[in-house]
Length: 181
Image (cartoon, rainbow, N blue to C red; front, side):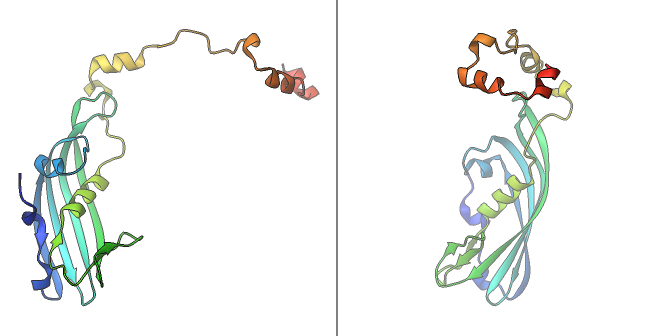
């Protein structure tokens, strides 16, 4: 497992202006986070830290593929990822996140840990519904099971099962509604 130092940017030593960094993300990187359903990944993250006097912009572009399970059949599949995100980082009296998802770094901080930003950008770049493009690529047994009729009983509600309160309301139908029945 890689150490967190690989994803730390020592921003205090950087001058004002833009600074580029590149990171390679694989399955081991994503295992450090909560279970995400990702089996493996080959992600290239190109980042740019734009440093100002009182704040920084951290632009992240992730491209590559992740191996995950199909939402329909649970078989492994490859999902392409290509996403850009901009994060705002301000300098303040203490380290915290604001309600607007702005990271505020206190005066004691000197490193920017990019792991959370890289993880979030990758997750945002993935489609919400991950299914095989063609249903033929799905696991045949699962698709067959999903398409079989589970309940052969009629969907009609039996009159004797009708709640008496609803039966009373049924009697209030207008004359036009009664003609339609």
